[in-house]
Structure formats: C-alpha cells, structure tokens
Image 1 (cartoon, helix red, strand yellow):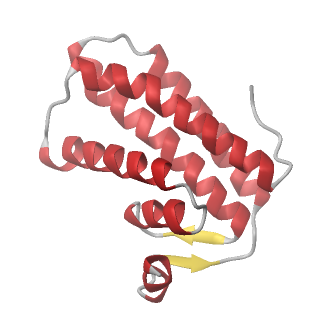
Image 2 (cartoon, helix red, strand yellow):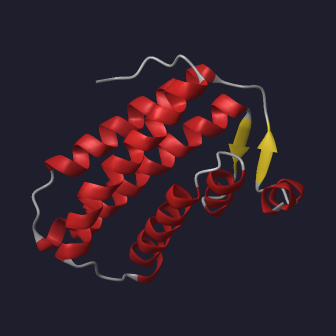
Length: 145
C-alpha cells in the first residue's frame, strides 16, 4: 500500500529486471563491508565504519530491487520495499534504523558510540546474509565470496 503510493510519487519505479546490475551491486556491497571491517575500531573511524556498513546494506537491498524490476530514488522507499514487497519486516525496521543513524552522521554531524559501531559490525553482516539468502532464492546470482 505505501510502496504503491511511493511509486505514484516517483520514489520508486518499475524497470526491466537487471541481474547484471544486481550482481555489480552485490560486489560493491561486499567490498564496502570488507572496507568497514578493515577500519580500526578507533573513535575517529566510528562514523566511517557506520557509513560503509550502511552503504553495503543499502546496496544489497537495491540488488533485490533490480532482480524484481524496481529502481529506487530514495533510501526511505527501500525500507517500504523491504517490508511490503520482500515481506521482510524485521530487516526493513533495522535497515531504517541504520538509515536514520547514517543520516544523522552525514547531515547533522551526530556522533556515534563505540557500542553502536560494534553492534552494527555484528548486525549488518547478519542482515546481509539474510538478504543474500533471499537473493539466492529469487535468482541464481553468483556471489562473491
């Protein structure tokens, strides 16, 4: 229902399915995840770690969109897509929480705690694994190890 309204507002649109774009996004997402994990857990890196982790999660979610024939123009609509189309409410809620955290960092200069970063370093790879399983169920996409 909300996704349909988002489509009417142009926040998402129907496109031809694009498995090659999905595969490319998956590779970028896994690279971003690796980059986040390689950053040392020091206060001056906390924001960069969260940004990279969020970026990896967002790219994985967008890959599902390309496999199902959707393109998104906002990150907020990805939350709705995950909930209503992919039927993954728990993932959508966590995605939205990290989206807001990243927006707070990027647009309002908010700080992030070590505990939040440690939780994200654990939770986002788990969310990506759940999305990866969903992607494998949807399409035979070859994943990077």
